[in-house]
Amino acid sequence: MSLTKLVSLALLIATGLPIQFSRAEDLHLTLAAAEEVEPYVYHSEDGETTGIDYEIVRETLTRAGVRFDLKSFPRPRITLMLGQGALDGLLTTTGYNDKDALNALWLSSPLYTSTVSTFIRKKKAAEEEAGVGNDRLKNCRQVGVLRGFNYRFPSLDMTHFKSVVEVNGAEQLVKLTMYGRVDCAITEDITFMYQARRLGYFNDVTIVDEVVNRPVVIALSRQLVDANKGLDTRINQVIEDLKSRDVIDNIIIKYLSLGAH
Image (cartoon, rainbow, N blue to C red; front, top):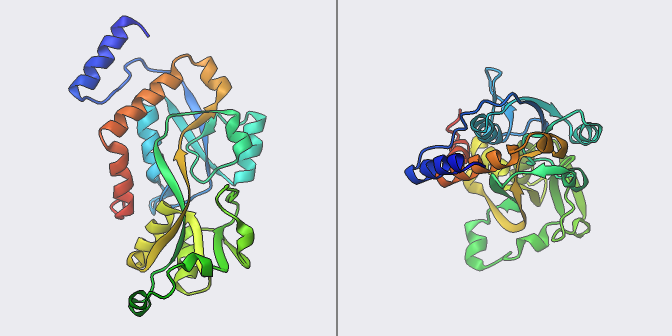
């Protein structure tokens, strides 16, 4: 980066102004999302694409001088298309954690941290007062999980559970948990609590165990990044600027409070 650009960047940061790269990039990407998962990436009632990840990445790439089209596919198809070079990358790694495929991609600085946790219904007041069931996870014999999500985490032993119930979305996981169809549910905090609030059960569920914390990032083809010098730096600079001004946190809070509806 030239001295002039360094000085300009320093002035932007010092004055607290948002970073906006003035040099237009003739770069139009095709990015994939792992199907529609509220509140990360989904279509609103009027058909517009929206969601936490969509808003964050749109803001990031726009400021970095990049346009993109978004395609939604099942996870196995994304893996195949990435291997064939039919995609420029992933909007984000939320909902997609194929380690082999991700190892072949360029990964941005973290946008935010996603936590995969175990959820149960809150104890009844009488149980809490009596101190009964303090280790509720020990009593989780039937667990609800998301179909197609990779649950291979070092801290998670799925053989612990007597049976595993697979569903297509977090809304179903919340309902299964509240209706007593499963003893616990394992999924990402944001999507589970978003659906719990939407269904009116936000205060009726609780986390009993954090399985893993994962950084959510933008993932792009290494060939693409190598062919567009400075693209990686621009994207990461914008991410850090947005985080420093709480833009990303505020987007997440807006959706969790159902403010986007």
